[in-house]
Length: 251
Image (cartoon, rainbow, N blue to C red; front, side, top):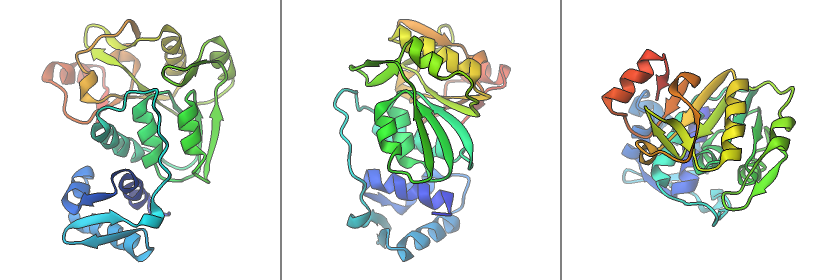
């Protein structure tokens, strides 16, 4: 679909099935209601959605196959989808992107438009989801599979990334505080995250608000190491001030 915003709306509806028009408008605060209405008219004319009494519903034939991932904690899905929409608006054609293993990034690939991209990931489930997008070229890293979180990491993963150029890296974290930075429970994943952060031209941290204030076993980055944070709600003033000090963009 040529309209990137309409494509994002459609992919969001595939996850939600039925959404109020007002709620869709709230997802895109930088656009007015008339712009969003035109996107919905386009989707309706092409047979993707129906509109009735202020509600927008996906047509049954447009429903994406649901892939159940039982090994991960599926919490804060609404928050993760909001983050995914914000991240999708950053995408442009022909970017080289790294997506690390996280449920937020899994929601991201479901929502993102099907445009020409080169995506590298260490997540087999993200790789599977991306296989549904015709215009996306996908590379999965080698390495040892962590079955508890369905991610691939270790020395082989790092070695497989040599000679790659990464425009943007979208990284997840299990915890974030000003004092301890961004943290995770698995040391091998942290090592891979550090390596990616050092390689990427732009680093985007994807965290839902439930992760703020939590500290996990291993720190892999500080605020000064990243370029942008995407969260589902505003952060407290002390964190916002720290972001501004290091010129980190908040969305």
